[in-house]
Length: 160
Length: 399
Ligand SMILES: Cc1ncc(COP(=O)(O)O)c(C=O)c1O
Image 1 (cartoon, protein in one colour):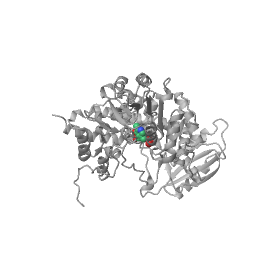
Image 2 (cartoon, rainbow over the protein chains, first blue to last red; image 1 turned 180 degrees about the horizontal axis):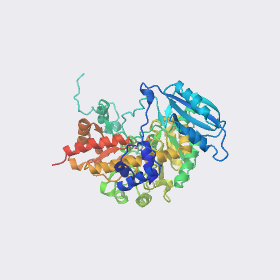
Image 3 (tube, protein in one colour; image 1 turned 90 degrees about the vertical axis):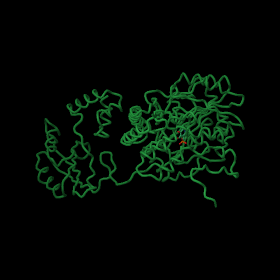
Image 4 (cartoon, rainbow over the protein chains, first blue to last red; image 1 turned 120 degrees about the vertical axis):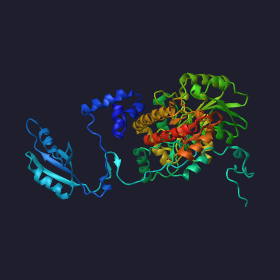
C-alpha cells in the first residue's frame, strides 16, 4: 500500500525500494512503481535532510510572521497567499483561523534581512493590511525532532 | 582470601537456602557483564522496547506527583485502574472480570507470576511448561517449592506446545500448566484450536492454567487468542498481563493478574505482606495508557512488524534458518549451519563481531541450537547486525 511506503519514507527518505519491499512484503518492482507515481502526482515532493543548523556556526534567523489581509472578491485568500509564497525567504505559509489570516515562517541570514523582507516586500503587496513579526529565540523541536543535544536514554544491560 | 579462578562457577554457599542455590545463574548475565565493558556493540540481546514511554502517559504520572499522589494505594490497586483493566479486557477479548475481587494490580507480570506460583503450589507440586520458555518461569516454580516439568517444543511445529505432549507429562502431582504466548524467546503464537485442545486436557485433569499474555498486543498478521476467553476455562485460569511491552513501560513496574476470587484473594494476601501496592505513579500512568494509549500501541506494532520482516529475511539470507515469528519482538534462528553451540555462537559473535544475542540454551534445553535476537532496535542497527552476523556465519560455516 502506498500509505505504508510513504510512512517509511517520511521517517527515512534513504530507505531503498528493496528495503521497503522487505518491510511491507510487496514486490520491489511494485514499490518502485508506486514511488515513481507518487513523485509524479506530487505526493512525494522531495527528499531532504532534516538539518539542525544551530549545531554549526551559521547565522540563521527564523521569524513567524502573522499577516492580516483583505481577501479578493473572486480569489479569496489564495491569490495573495500564492503571491507571498513566491518569495524565497518564505519557508512555509499557512492560512489560519483566528485574529490574523496568514502565518509565514521566514528564514533569513539576520534580523535585518527579515526586517527588510517585511518592510520592503511584504508591506507593499496589495491587500496586506498589517503584519506582526515574532523572531524565534530558540528552536526546541523541529518537524518532530528534538533539537537538544541530548544523548538519549540508553537501555541498561538487564538480565531477562 | 583465596583467589577464585575466572570461569569457575560461584560456590554454592551453605548459608543460602537450597531452593535458591538450585536456581541456575541466568545464562545471560555473563554476556551482559562482558557487553557492558565493550564499545561499539550492537545489542539484539535486551528484551524490551527501544521506545521511551509515550509522553502523554509519562505526563499523567508527572502530574500525579505534582498533585501529591505519593501514598500507597489499595492493596489490590487503584479502583480506577482495576475498572479500566476490566473494561479493556472486555472490549478486546469479551471476557468479564469483576474489578472488585477478580483483579490484582502487581509490580509487573514478574510479581504476578511469583504470586501465582506461591498461591497455588504445595511442596513438590508440578507445573508443566513449554521448553524453551521465559527465564523466570522455572525459577518462580522452584522458589515456590514446586517442580517445573518441561514439554519440548520444536521449530518444525512453530514452537507451539502440543496438548498431547502436555497430557503425557501429567502425574498425580501436576497442579498447573504455565503458558506464555506470544512467546519469549521464540516469538511463537498459539492458535485457538491448539489452545482449545490444551483447555480440554486441563479440564479433564482438573488443572489450573496460568497464561502469561504480556505480549498479547504484539502480534503480526494474526489474532491473539486470550486463553481466559475460551469457553468454560475462566474458573480455572490465572491470566497475567501488563504494560511493559505494549506501551513501552518496562521501567514503571506495573502489571495485573486476573483470576477467580479465591485465587486473587490468596495472591493479594501474599502481595499485601510483601509489596503492599504497586507504585502509585505507575498505576496512574497505566490508567492513562489504557484510556488513551491505543494509537501508540498500533504505531509501535506497525513499526515492529517492519523490523520483524527485515530481520527474518536477513537471517534466512545469511544461512540462519528462521521460522517466522508472529508475536513478541524476537526472532529465534537456528544456528545449525555453524556447528557451534548456542553459547559458543553468542560468545564468539560478541567478541569477533560485537553483536550481542542470547544463547537459546538460556531458555531451556530445547533452546540449544538457536539464539534469540530481539528486533526492538533501530532498522539501521538491525541491518548492520545482519551484515556482521553474515560475515560471522560464513567464517564459521560447518565444514
Ligand atoms: C514472557 C515474559 N513475561 C513476563 C515478563 C516480565 O514483565 P513485567 O515487566 O511486566 O514484569 C517478561 C519480560 O521480559 C517476559 O518476556
